[in-house]
Image (tube, rainbow, N blue to C red; front, side, top):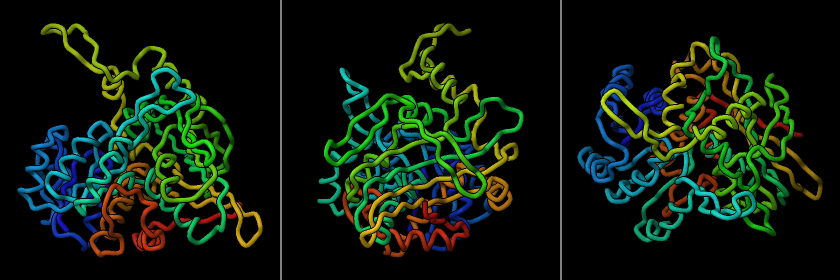
Length: 404
């Protein structure tokens, strides 16, 4: 397997550090718009299988040419969701398998955004599913931690733990703190704003997909391994759009443990229009310039990849499932916890980016070995869960199951 990794930020760099310990691939080309970032990621490894390149993720022709030049058969997208579609199309143009960790962006319903779906997450990609399948090509979408591992948990629950599933609810929480910062998100603020301020999507079997208001239906969820109770709220996320395509459940939700202060900050950004992606004109020393308010917010905050030494605590990703097994009610929480102290000591990557990065590497190894295979635009639920969970444990990062 020869891989083109696009994006050498926190998650991309963690991908290289995890993959460097595995023998399943022949080469990994690490490409970024900033060549210094790609070169730094490669130089850290001292592994001849890795090399650095510069590429504009929005330039489909350039990405396809890079895939062909290095004879890469897989494109792994580690950029933010703005670049999903150009990279998705570039992979198909070059005849490469495509893997991402977030799906094509949504657009709220123009008249009724808090009840009806507009363009849903992943709609643009699934619109091309038939063409990918006809070509015998594979796009594995949403293969990070959430979405990704959370979807694998949903498939595992359906296959091995339940006869009928009433509800699948992804629940994400942490007790992470960052020394020296009052507000320092542990993941891309661009992506965080996108998923938290868009109308959340809920799925119900008798109603289909519908939306609610941001931060709706608050609940306190007790997270394992010392994290404890965290208030979680509805957030737009890919699992709600992916799980019902392959897993039979009467209801699917995603709730994120954000905390009151974080929610208040996001609401203020929205009130001021600083969550907008459309450029505005601002004065500059050389004349007016056009800049996206959300990009300004991101530039004013610390790079999440640099926060590891200041971070304390654990992060938990997991899938809560309620249903029936052998005629009796059952309720479980399948989860994966990463301690920042461990991920920093073992890989030099902070917990949130490491937890995101490990899952696509596991998926690549399964694809390389043939344990996972398929054609079309497929989510993690379309593949058997047990090989993935066994290999994740072999990577030294076991998952857990708690009866509720």
